[in-house]
Image (tube, rainbow, N blue to C red; front, side, top):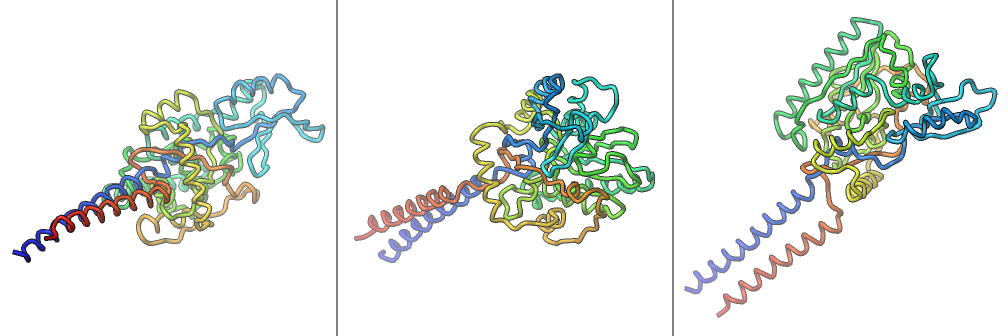
Amino acid sequence: MHTRRQARRLIRISTVLALCAVTVSSAMALLLCRYTVRDIGFVSLGEPNWILVIDENNSGLESAGRVLLQDSNVDLETRRLGQDVAGDAWLEDRDGRMLQLPLQPGLSDMQKIESVVRSDARTRIADAALDRFAVILLLEGTDAKANTRAREAIDSAEAMLAELDADGTSLPRRIGKGPDQVIVPVDAGESVLRWSLGLPIEPGRQPSIAVLYGRSKLAGRVLHGPGMTAGDILDQLSVVGLSCECEQARDWALRPSLPGTWTRSYHMSAVDQLGFDPSHPLVLAEVRRILARGNDAPVLTNPGDTSEDLVLGYSESTVIEDIPVSPAAERPEPIAPPAQRAPGSRSNESLGWISILLGAIVAAGIAGALVILRRGRP
C-alpha cells in the first residue's frame, strides 16, 4: 500500500513538472517567433538616406521641395553652392557622393524635385514590395547575351527559393507570394535609380541585379557583371526571409532604401498586408532594441556570402565583379537602419522578461510538487 501511494505521488509530481515544461516551451515559442528581416524592412526610424541640396538663392525650387519631399526619405537642405558649383540642385548620399539635377533639360521646378523621388521603375518596385516577398531588379546592359544569362540566373534563384519554402523547415515562416521581377531596359533612363545603387548613370555592357524588399530597401550589395550566379541572388533572398533576431550580423539593417515617397496609401496597404502598424511607437521601440543587439553581432564583409550558410547549413563562395565606379559608390550602405514588427515572424523579448517568466513558471512547478508531497505524507 505504501509503495502504491508513493508511486501515485511520483506520477502526480511528474505530471506537474511535465505541464511546467510544456508551458515553458509554449512561452518560449511565443517569445521567439515574431519578426523576419522582411518585416523590419517596412519600419522607418526616421533617418533619411538621401539629401537634396538646393542653392539658397533658389526660393522657387526650395518651395517645390518642401511640398514634394514631405512623404519621402529625402531631406532638403539649402546651401550656398558658390560659383564653382554648376547647377542649383544636387542629390547627395551619406558618403558625400553628389548627383547634379536636372538630368533632363527643360524641366520645371516641380518636375526636377519629382525626378528625385519618383520614376517608373521605382514605383513598380514599391508597389510590388507591398505584397510580394521581395523584388528582383534587373538593370539590363547593352550585351543581350549577358542580359539573357542574368534573367536565367534570376529564374533559377526563384526556383531554389521555392524549394526552400516548400520544405517548411529552412525559413522561419512561409514566404507567401514569391519574388516579383522588375526589368529596366537600357533605354529606360532611370538615372537617379542607377546612381542611388552606386552604378554609372549610363548603362554599360553588363547587367546589374539588386534584391529589394519592404520600403524598397536593398537586401545586399548590387550584383554586377558576368560573375553573377543564381546562388548570389538566393543568398540575398534568403536574408530577407530570416528571423531578424537570429545570431547573424546586422549588415542588412545598414542597407539603404531607394530615394522615394511613402504615402499614406502605401502605409495603409502595408498595415493591411502585414497585420500590424509599422509606425506604431511600440513597434519602433522594439525594432530599435533588436537593431541595438546587433552591435555585438559579427560584422560581415559580404552579407551575401553567409545567408546560404545560415539557411542551408553550408557555404558556397561567390564571384561578383566589382562595379566600375568610385570607391565611395561601391559601398551601398547608407544611413541608419529601418525596421519593423509583424505577428508570426521571429523575435526575442528582452532577456530580463524571459528570465522572470521562466523563473515564475519553475517556481510554480516546484511549489506544486511540494504541495503534492506534503499532502501525501502519512
